Structure formats: structure tokens, C-alpha cells
Amino acid sequence: MALELPALPYAYDALGPYMSKETLEFHHDKHHMAYVTNGNNLLKDSPLASLSIEEICKKAFAEKNAGLVNNVGQHYNHIHFWSWMKPNGGGKKLPGKLAAAIDQDLGGYDKMRADFVQAGLTQFGSGWCWIAVKDGKLAIMKTPNGENPLMHGASPILGCDVWEHSYYIDYRNLRQKYLEAFVDNLVNWEHVEDMRSKA
Ligand code: MN3
Image (cartoon, rainbow, N blue to C red; front, side, top):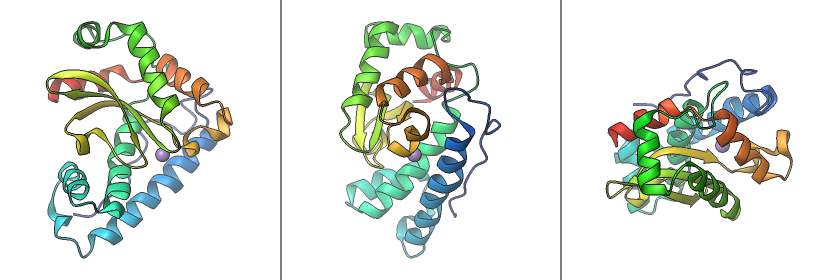
């Protein structure tokens, strides 16, 4: 089953001023497309090709297949990244069950926000920061390059792309401002709760 680039779930200009049309055009149409193309080329002769994308992520990491880890990993990460955002998202309007889990496992909303931003800020170079379910509890994580929590025994429920291609047009080098705008104005908490309920 070939990897396919999904359409954005909103218009290219829908996330302004927090994420611009230009950023989404480059990020979705060029960067995500490249992971799809490279992933399909690498899967052509791979016995992993028939597996689900989640299983390819786990097996490729276990087998230290860096090409598949980064390209199929990034495909998985970006499919969800687009859905983890929405216009007028972010802030404290969380579904009740998600808010309760954050209170119980992550010390409440304000501490979760601070720890999530800090994880993204301290991921050296390219990568992602996450909220994931690990051993039945929520945890803040960070991973380099195309890796994701699936490869580390956890299920991601929220991720923020901290590769420079995700923020440099809109925020230049100010990664912290981008991370704060993501949490405060962009997160689709309903999609986060949907993934939490299935993790
Ligand atoms: Mn990206």
C-alpha cells in the first residue's frame, strides 16, 4: 500500500496569523510530499511495505533502518500534525476527560504547557516534542529527526514539529514563540482527546 499525501483539513490561509499560508504551502506541499516520495521509494523493495504505517515505524526503528525511520516516521508525524491544529484552537478549552488526565498525570494545564514548550525548546536540532501515553499514563517526550513515540514504546496524542521548516518563515529563530503560539492558538484538543481515548 503506497503512502499518500493527505489534503490539509483546512484552507492554507486558515491558521493565520499563527501559521502562514506560505509556511503551510512549503511544509505540506514540499516537505511532507518529499517524505511520501522517499518513503515509497524505500518501501518498494522492503518486506515492511505491507504493514500499517504504525507497524512500519516500530519495525524500521527496531531494525535501525534510518531511511524508513525518518521518511515513514515523518509521514506519520505530519499526517497527525495537520490534524493536531485547527483555526481558533489551543488554549484551555479542553474536553473534560483530557483535562482530567492532564491534571492527574502532567500536573495540570499550566505545567503541561510549560513542560511541552520546554521539551520543544530543548530538542537540539530537528525533531518533535510530544504528549504521549506510556504505560497507561500521559508523558511529555521529545525525539530527534523523524522519530516518534511509537518507536519508544509509547502512543503519541499530540506532537509539535520543531524542524526549522515548520516555523522559520513566520517566527525566524524564535522557536519558543512558535511553540507558545501552537499551544495557545492552534491545537485541536478534540483530536488529541480522540487519540488519547484510543491509545
Ligand atoms: Mn515538518
